[in-house]
Image (cartoon, rainbow, N blue to C red):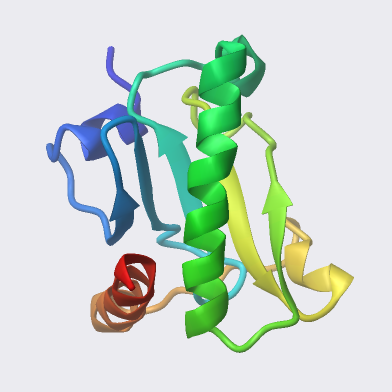
Length: 132
């Protein structure tokens, strides 16, 4: 059975996509820790990030770097934090989280519940910065 993220790749379920290339997709987390919190995935469904080939692992990080730069241009923050947990969805993914303090990446904190309009607005801004 296809993972939730594969269904997003296949456009079977909607997502607020911020960047895409032939092998990767980046989209907003629908229950973010902070606004701009994005997920970067390989389009190929692989459960564990370290099951990616060396080339795939390097390429997903290079793609994530471009997405992180776009997020940083969009959201006021000190840095973009990176987390790879890999337990929530059986599809390799990287969390990119705008941070100003260590606690901004505390996954036990309550998540935000932005509206679809809020998500669409920030996704559009990140995507515009990704493309420029």
